[in-house]
Image 1: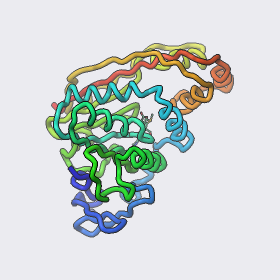
Image 2: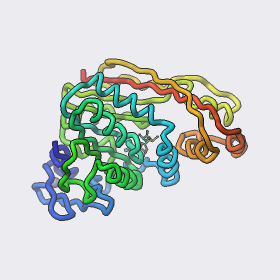
Image 3: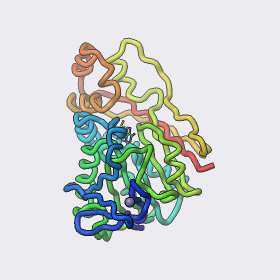
Length: 297
Ligand SMILES: C[S@@+](CC[C@H](N)C(=O)[O-])C[C@H]1O[C@@H](n2cnc3c(N)ncnc32)[C@H](O)[C@@H]1O
Ligand SMILES: [Zn+2]
């Protein structure tokens, strides 16, 4: 499977091919490949619609924290769920709101290793900076050619990143068999359009005790509630997996990077932030997530 078999021109829906540093559709619309290797397939004028993307500071914090490995078990359980509930010889994956790419790259590697299948994943995020960081990581991990989208690539596990709006993806209808949504808005209708009839959508969301000890430090009153997604229209729930573990945060700077990548960052008082920065290390922290596995109905 080649990435250019999945992508379509965002202006007219025609297929794309690469010449030099440009992707062109059969009608002549042209899209330059950026230095980091992605291609921006947001149609002109539509870019601002997708600007709910994380700010640079959050992307950097996410990259710093995730690279430390505290969340690796979240990704591994996700890949194991895909292997169990969507077994196949060849995967095409779309990660909707992928952030800076840690989970997408790890997911690809783990799924390929577990199933010996060919895996081709594309992560889309509203933040161009996140897509750029994702490309860097994928090239470093040997998952993407350094010349970018559409360049020759020998590997059987590939991961690409591009800026994109998950509510309007430049992907052909029924072109992917796994759609992922991790801690991101769920674009159910678009997932349904791009998935094959036997495809699955896996939504990863926070369980009620997720980061409990952090919340107890920053808020006076902590409510325990799951953030389980509703079943999107046109899907049925196949399974739900609950994964809860305790991790020991080793350094204050790790904890503060985690804090900066969460929505709490925007909602916490200075006093709450200071209380968190003062906790002793190591700090035991609950990680609690749900995986909702939806099949196309
Ligand atoms: C909380 S982050 C999660 C990132 C990644 N999935 C992870 O778990 O590390 C949510 C991401 O969704 C992205 N996002 C939000 N709305 C989006 C949209 N309409 N299109 C594309 N990405 C979007 C944000 O830019 C952000 O990177
Ligand atoms: Zn076109």
